[in-house]
Image 1 (tube, helix red, strand yellow):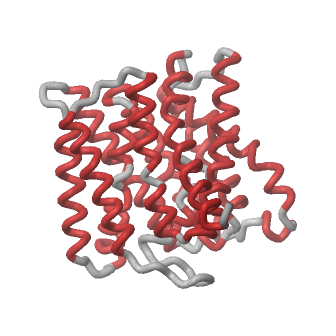
Image 2: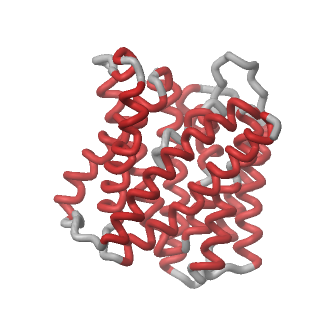
Length: 310
C-alpha cells in the first residue's frame, strides 16, 4: 500500500471513530449518566489512555510554561462548553443531525477570525455562511419544540468549538507537543466539570460494567484517532485530510439510521448535504501550505483539531 493510500485510510478511520462516539454517549446515558458526568469520565479515561505516550516523551516536552496555565484553563472552558452543548443535543434531535450541525464550526472559525482578528472576509465565506444557515433551517423539523432547542444547541456547540480552535491557534498553545497538550487539557476539562456537577447534582459514578467498558474504549479509540489523523495530515496534507473528515458526520448519520432508529427525512438529508457542502467549499478553496510551514488560519486547526478531545 502506497503512503498516500495509507494516509487516506488513516484519515477515514479517524473520522469514523469520532462519528461513532455519540452512540457510545447514548449507551452511557441509558445507564443513568448525565451529560456532564459522561464527559467528565471520558476525559479522565482519555488522560489515562495518553499516559504511556506522555511518559515516553523527554522530560522537557512534558512540562508547561508558567504562562501557559491560564491560557490552558480558558481553552479548556471553550472545549468543555462545546462538549456539553453537543452531547446535550443528542437526545433532542438525534446524533447524526447534531454531529452535522456541530460540523459547521469551520464557518464559525472563519467568522471568528474575521471579527476578532480582522482577517479579510472573502466571498466564499459569505457563500459558506449562507449554505450553513440554509442547512440548519432544513434540519429543523417544524412543530417540534425539542427539535428547535436541539438544533440551536448543536449549532451553538459549533461556535464554542470554533472559539476553542481560534484560541488554540492564537494563544501559542499550539506549539505545545500534541500529547502533552492533550493530557493537560483533558485533566483541565475534567476539573472544570467537577464544580458544575456538584452545583447541578449531576455527578454519577455508579455505572454498570458495560458503561465503564464503553468509556474506556471510546477514550482509547479517540486517542488512537488523534494519532491516525496526524498521520493522515502528514501523508496526504491538511486539505485532503479535512475533506475526508466529513466521514465523521456521515458515520454518525448512518449509525443513527441503522442502529438507533433516529428520524430522518429528505428535508434533513438536504440540510446535511448543505452543511457538508459549506465545509468542503472552505476546504477545497483554501491554500495548501508548503511542507514544514505552519498552517494558516483557519485551516491550521485541521492539523490540531483532534488532540483526542472531542
